[in-house]
Amino acid sequence: MWELGLSFGKSQVFGDVLNYGFGYGAGLTFRKALGHVISLRGGLLYQKSSGIDDKLWSSDKVDGYMSPTLGYRGLSPTYGLYSVYVPSNPNLALRGFVPNYRNVSVSGTLDVIASLNTISHYRGNPKWDWYVFLGYAMVNSDIDTRVALGGNGATPFDFTTINYNGKSDDIQKAVSNLISQANTGGAKENYTNAPVRRRNNSVSNSKNFLLHHALTYGGGFSYKLSDKVNIGLEDRLMNTFNGDQDGINTGKNDLLGYFSAHLNINLGNKATHVQPLWWLNPNNYVYSELNIPRHMKLPKVVLPDGDGDGVTDQFDLEPNTPRGCPVDTHGVSKDTDGDGVPDCRDKEILTLLKCFPVNSDGVGTCPEPACCKEIRDMLATRPVEKAAECTIGNLPSIQFKGNAKLSKAAESVLANAAATIKANPNCNVKVIGYGASSKAAQQLSWERVNAVIKYLAEKQGISESRLLFQYGQDGDSNTVDLQGTMENGPTMVPAPHPNLRKN
Image (cartoon, rainbow, N blue to C red; front, top):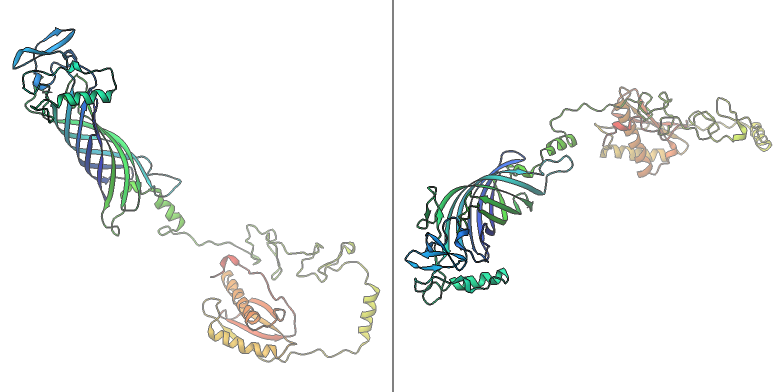
């Protein structure tokens, strides 16, 4: 986008004469980015300022001339001060004078701007634009000075009547009141062209428009209110390489100053144009691409887990854990009593320390208590009852499509199966999942079995202790079978590959 800028502020001349009153200016600019740091800005600037000095000058302080109504004549000492003779009457002389001016300038500017804080490795797009600039200006100045003769046009003012030992403001007001009496009746201020030094080293007050080149420089900052609008402050100086801007030339260059507030508006359709590049951090593209890749092709992350215990081989301290054995976060089989036999093979999970060492089944060496022996002998003498059999019959299969979410049809099938399971309380039920071809298939098989068990337990009220967890079997991977049994087994096993879990 292009940026349209509007400015208003204080204008003044930095020269030999003190500023008097409030000088003001207004500007219009257009700015375009060449990159994230460098941009070009062209504009028009109007400035108006005035000044009155607070000291009485003698003509020897001036570069050969002074006020236009007093002309350019030979100098002679009078009362210790140099006198300047009036052209129309050489017999009249002015002992001293106070320089004053009014400057109205119109400038065309072209600036090269450098934004100082666009690029950052630690944040996103900036909210502030701090910048400096250097450029060229063509300045057309209309420089006037107040008439320094009496109302009758013959008698020069006597500036020596003013007390120059007081405050600057009081002196300037007194001089302003004095020279405002230039017209007959003393009712209004009169301006005339100021003398200026021409290229041929002649002095002229007939053409008070000065057209000259200037070097302009300065700095400022802007704050972004939105993607379209920002505000800020700026300070500009223009060196015109002459001393005529304050109406009197002592051989020193004068500067035109402009301190302003500005309102900037980005021009362009937001849907098809980005903001000016000084509001965009070029590193943001890299950060965004790394955060959410759109163009980089990243390989699929593969974390090998050879024993399928849910702990990747890189961190697995027991890479060959038997299938179905619960493990800790390091991939080591859990051993509750610390007897060296993992819980999945330990027939005595909590062996007392005094009964160590244990045999291969995890059973300690403590003798059997007498009471337990009597109970065992008593049970041995009882007639053997015929073990109960499971007569639950055939149970249905559950079908899945693509993921582990139960469809409405599958939930209906499970609801009917739950009624049969409840009617046969002596039977456990194997929940069998298939899919052993890959780690992803094993994980999906586990998720489907888990979904069936959760539905039967949470929605149908069947005890989880009756639902035996089996997954990763050879068979149709989209099917989970229910099978009645009198056997016991694990009701929950850890996910084999949790990193491959689907949403």
